[in-house]
Image (cartoon, rainbow, N blue to C red; front, side, top):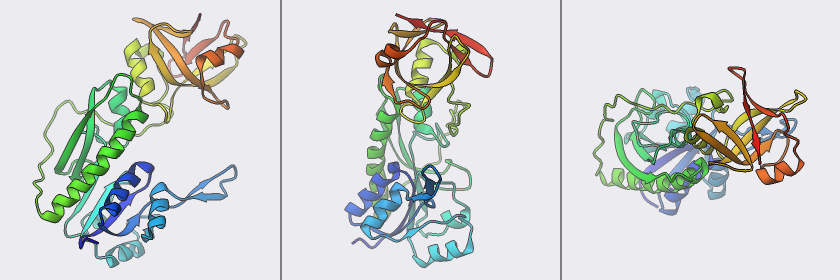
Length: 316
């Protein structure tokens, strides 16, 4: 076991790979901080642990789950571990009293090439915007979110066929390697943090909600709609509203599309977007060919809710 005492902070699967990399390389992770267990199930009567907690418990690592990061009881417990370094991967914004605690600082792994895509959903927005490259960055935390001095960055291409799920998996692995490299360099005293460059055309990465994941057909070309859909696939899913000839409306999620004709197309300003894999509310995700076998789409339209516009569908 190495001497450096580390506290790791994270919640989802994306963070587990980095924690696992530290454990497998014999770093002394003295505690893990993660979100409180989440109520799940029909009646919200079952508590589900985060992926990071599940891994930590399996490794015998103490787990802290504060409701409030400024709570004095939590801060006292955090101090009791006498950590030299804190590492944050997909957790939450920390108050200064937390990130300034360890003598070697607190660094974060961000799933983008900072300073681009500061915010909660960097992987999604890089794909939505049609970028051909993304990456991961480690940086020291400071007072403003995602603005601290950069320690290391690694880039990777985004293929035109990649969904956000594909990019997520690659960055999860690249990120774990970069976390390990960063810790190795901090332990060796061989780091040279650099301020983030001042770039005028910064692209944000805001959190995803229902209103910014709706497909606003009137604003899209074929390519931008195609990128929007793959940038939200498989989660949370780009959605639209399907209105049938009898006036009934239901949510329709689109997970895969094609630039060009298909058996179910949406005509846009510069051509057709083919829908390839979809999911109606309350139904399973399915290829469009399966959907069309039981669907009655004569007179059906897609509704753009905000502008009260409709878009026709072409079935062939």
